[in-house]
Image 1 (cartoon, chains in turn blue, brown):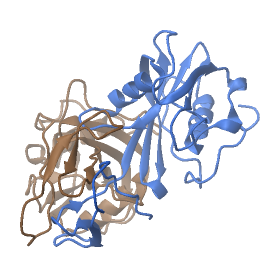
Image 2 (cartoon, helix red, strand yellow):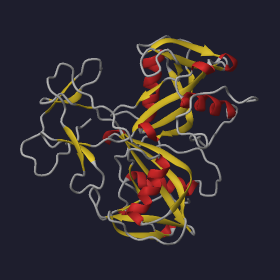
Image 3 (cartoon, each protein chain N blue to C red):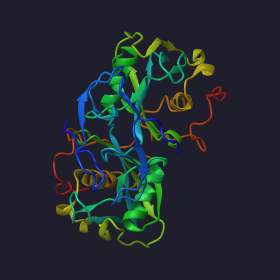
Image 4 (cartoon, rainbow over the protein chains, first blue to last red):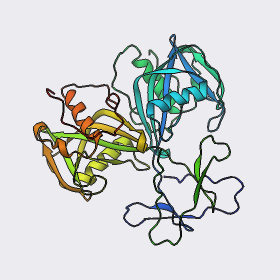
Length: 196
Length: 196
């Protein structure tokens, strides 16, 4: 799996000096700083987010940041330390859409192993119809199912979440979904299947 | 939330030199190396594991490592880069119990924000009755419900998973559980409620 470039503070002279080897007592190679011996354990990251509906419409945010700037996504983002997955999903809706949401239940857990991401997606509703673009969004909008900009969705998992949500929309309690059979997040969104 | 001590390679002279400040373009303080500017983003870690049954009995492992050495736990551990949550759960059963398991469905997502952990627990069965203690286990055993060593469980979430599993044992499809109401992982396991 590709190593992501490591973040370095702006304005610092000189390069980072990590090399990859197996620390004693471990069984996998890790990045270790040649200067101070710091072992950089990298674990999969958790994305938390929601399919948010209001009056039968779907809340989507147009991304103001890379990757996929200008494309439409669900309110979702990296979970932070010290919060729960539910708190993280609510925080992301506040940050990206200035929206207050009520979580209903778990919609899906998606795995994108290529980028070591686990996405935990909830079913949610807007608690009021107040929302607007947060710092990371160009615009935020409620779309009816037929208005969803399928050709301009940011990520495959946005497509998965919307279509899976739609397939159980009337069900009170659901067993959560996983990746669609055989999909690993490398294929781009397509039109929704007919008849759902 | 308490900062965990950072891992350092054995035999390296000198201390790590991280200090905590907000990097430009960010909105939370992070640990930044005073020497090279490396920004240490720390995200919640994912634990993957399973309640594994065979012939109505429950597979438990007695821990050979700290924390809670000598206490009984489910086959579970930290998810690694490049694997899915399901692959991670199967790997942990292989590593800790030399067991080959078949995952059935998602049992629960638990949040332990104090230690920034998200635990993703599956329902699973042993594919054969072959199992034995792996490197991180002192012993591995199948217990009937009444034989489970309730006083010697390693973590609250082991208790949660076993009792929640039991409450839906006969159900084909389930909506997954979360932490029991009001619990954050700080209370130690108790006897199971009567009558389940």
